[in-house]
Image 1 (tube, one colour):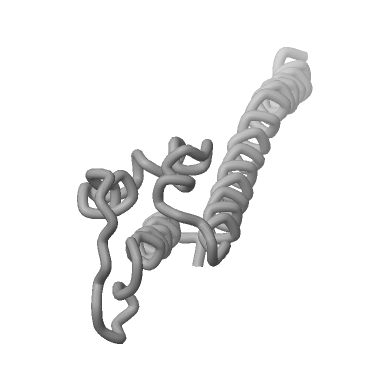
Image 2 (cartoon, helix red, strand yellow):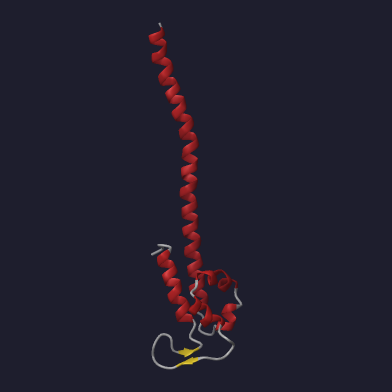
Length: 124
């Protein structure tokens, strides 16, 4: 009789235990997946908004550094990019036909670093 009872109790306890573990682990795993999806989505939106702001042809470095976007982006930029945006108040003109030429050529420097950030975050 003990043998028959153990054949019933052991599988029942194993089923109960696996059900409890599964009901606790499954939501935790799902939460982790959703957290990563949300983080990725927020990063993609952040990059898009930064590029959209920088695509404005009339945007100056002074206007850009006074935006909330720059406040968020600044922590990811190199010292050179921050210096290009914040500058010393003087007007800079870079001559030539390169991407970094023109009046206060900060946009391409920041856009290049946004691309590097996008690559670092594996959004490509």
